[in-house]
Amino acid sequence: MKKQENTPIKHIVILASPNTSLLDVTDPMEVFAKAKQYLPELTNQPPFVYQLHVVTNTRELQVTTSTGLPIVCESTLFDIRYPIDTLLIAGYTTGSQLLDQRIEADELPPHISDVSPGKETVQWLRTQWKNIRRIGSVCTGAFLLAEAGILDGREATTHWHRCQLMATMYPEVKVNPDPIFVKDGPVYTSAGISTGLDLALSLVEEDYGRDVALYVARMLVLYLKRPGNQSQFSVVLAQQEVDYNPIQTIIDWIPEHLNDSLSVEKLAEQASMSPRNFSRVFARKTGITPARYIEKVRVEIARRRLEESNLTLNEISGECGLGSADTLRRLFLRHLKTSPSAYRRSFQTAVR
Image (tube, rainbow, N blue to C red):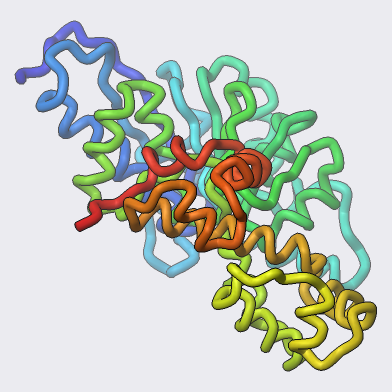
């Protein structure tokens, strides 16, 4: 279909600060670009089309990324004269590294203006963001939104490695370290690097519908289109670095025995420890109680079964030691804020 001349334009702007992560910029850019490219194949009357911009907040238009590969931006943020529909702040590393050094020296500053991409940028965001339909961040770009006060009173996320730092520096922000991205009103924050793809796909879905977003995901050869409530990391993977052998042995043993009655007494016996000592040591080494850990593992294994098989909910519940589909539903609503059936519709891959 030939693009109609009078089709409205929505300006999508990605802000690339010095030392930004290359993928924080290019991943969302590819999603929006593919949506623009394939939209004529998918609809005869698009409500609008995207026009894409990469800008910087320095007077030098060439920005060096954290990989050393430069990006040449079309303009500065301050020179924009068109109405911005969507602004995404890409993450950056220098500020985070400097903050780490200060924390080690017990000199945590109340703000990051001196090590963030700059006070001028913060002031621009404070005065201009409400004129933008939606604003968001990828990875540590959330720190710039927080510094500008945009995240005050809102739920937000960032890379899991920086969530505690954000919570400490910005107590007014409701930091959630688990999801891959969060929407709170017109403000969006996403976790580390590759989640910029997921956030951008969600924005495309908001604009053009699920079919267009799924088509773009397929054209990008993405394994899954993940919703924001997907966890940033696997609970099993997160515990693989436990440095106490009896507890690590139990962690390795649990996924193979989910159908057993996994009481503290049984786990303690398996670890050759007393129940009281086992519970205390497990919580100290993993940061989670044995019962809570087993619940999370069961949900994680159930997720995989929903993605990769055609088993019924009762069959999956039985495999995971949950007893019934009703228990599975309750745990999914508690941990993932969605039902098993809705999760399967979003995530199931082709099953032979």
